[in-house]
Length: 483
Image 1 (cartoon, rainbow, N blue to C red):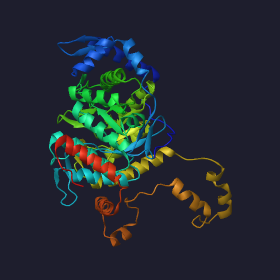
Image 2: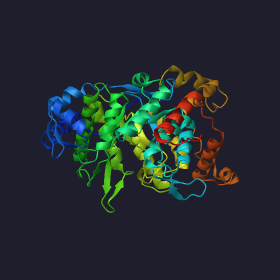
Image 3: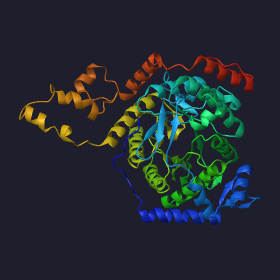
């Protein structure tokens, strides 16, 4: 889990990063950002920002930003439902998550696209729990068969039941955010324990250009109060909701992220944050989001460098595609965006597995395929270890000209260590492939997903804790919860 980064892709010089920083300060001081949550807006006013109450625009001076930014930690840990599982967000670590909050999925039985249900939420959590290269279990799909006012509680319960891994927190609005805090506190053993060992990863997606919505800022305040880590990831689209120039997009994105981090530190100094992006380009032929484009990778590289400039852990978007099926377009777009983000040193890569159609659609089969892609990319990050044993002069001498290494202990010692073995990718000859059914990768992925759903046993949640969680939902919303 995680890896020591050997090298980094960089596209910005130190001078260019400083220029972007300086341009961002100009945007924040002269243009400002709209903050639609009155409480956060008053906090900014009290801290020294110039606030226009009519427009809800706050203009942020450099000294205020500088004073608060230094309070954000440069590393932190996020825990699963118990503290034996944790992710350490710091330089040199890279983690992958499943994809997040699709409305649709490709039905594994029929192959048709349909709306997701609570049962699908459960399936993706189980798959995330089982797959070795998926480190964080995102809320992959949003259920259509549960009313909006209680869906956040049901999905949180499914996550806590069906994976030991770290989870997304639902932090939209004060009430829903507080429900997630209360439920996570039941698992953690109280709110103080939750503050000390956070269990939820919050999300803030500023509305580009330059706006923080009321609901997400309310959620930010709640999560910051309880010191739950929150990532800031604008979904700016070059040419429509951001300047067409990528440098201009990065400046605007930087203003959106830094102003959000500023609010978090005003609520609770030292609140853990991730400097992030979900930005990409607009396809000017269609007006649609071009999430699988090369520009997404370039924006991720710039984001990683700027996060490093501020000494903050980073969040990026990789393994994404505009393809509608598990096809060749999905393969090359996902490989490109995931590799660029990872090699840039992004610490947490969201949507790394399972997404199609610019994350609007999810697929269990695609998640299986992407798990292999994640494993290959993680292997590439480790590079080649060079020492006396790995240079293998002794075994080379032992085998000599014309020999082979299949029976050598050195081969047994180093094969699994130095070689990644994908679970479903085909490496057979044509003849063997034909004899075994000529199956393509999606068919094999379907088979593996079914096997995991049939056989994978998730470590059970403590029965008393589970009963308390169910009781919380029943008491709060008057609904019985089925197991």
